[in-house]
Amino acid sequence: TGNGLSAFSASHNGVLTYRTGATAGENLQMAWFDRQGKQIEPVGAPAPYRGVDVSPDGTRVAAHRHDGQGGDIWVHEQARGTTSRFTLDASQDNGSPIWSPDASRMAFSSLRGGSWGLYQKLSNGAGNDELLLETKTNAGPMSWSPDGRYLVYSLTGPKTGNDLWVLPLTGDRKPPSFGLTAPNSGEPRRSLGVGGPFPFAQTPFGENHGQISPDGRWIAYESTETGRVEVYVRPFPSGAGKWQVSTAGGIYPRWQRDGKELFYFGNVSLGKLFAVEVKASGATLEAGVPKALFDTGYVAMGHPGGTYHAYAVSPDGQRFLIPRPASAGAEEAAPSAVTVVLNWTASLKK
Image (cartoon, rainbow, N blue to C red; front, side):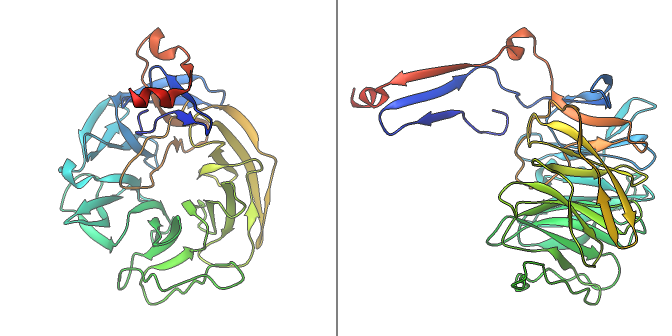
């Protein structure tokens, strides 16, 4: 498949099964879809996209194109229909772009000198890239607080899956210490420190895709703490309480601009898009019943840089930008076949 995985299985008694047929390939077509799943318009040309984000005013799309062993970030202006390169060295694998709240800057991940790091650059392309934080493992920016003070990023932990960290964009920016661990209660230990990065969710489980709410008071994220990936909401940057938003698995949470709805996918690939009404009352959050909107048609692709945004939401929450496999005709659309081979190990002796 496009992410390098094969579909086969061998039993203990000599039966082998495998699937054959066309795969999603590397070319994905970004397109806008309405809440019923109807395509409104394509965005840009098909390419191996790994991560998309829409500017706060909804006029520009930033996307990482994973060309070969690396890739750059490109920006598409919808009104003019133009696409231009934002970063200029594909060998650095510049990815996971996110816009700042005022759209003046863009944060992204990059591999330079053998080390991953978080960088920012003026969104008009002027000036040089600014290193925000160098990390020992893969890190990807996930969300910017609306006041511009904090940057939430996903960091591959040394022993478990991804953890969520917060980088204050003022004061000293020191590399995170892996000595910080979760207490016995299961709640991650947080210390605002003096300008340095601090862990928001660092547990034996995997936490990812942290999204700060439009009012800056909450953060939605995914966690595997129940054994299945679900979407949760907690106060930000600290506070008591945690609310599960998804009910039957959920991944890739994203907020509507007014903070009244949360969206997420039901599965990593080929899942449904769900919408959940959320209402905050003081220090308490109330989540409604998730409503399935449409089948996304999204196929997850691998990326050595780690986490990235699978889709984006328009400011009014009525349209969704989703990269889907570009059509290659009826042959690609045809279902794949499953082949069963009996006594397959006999062929190894020939």
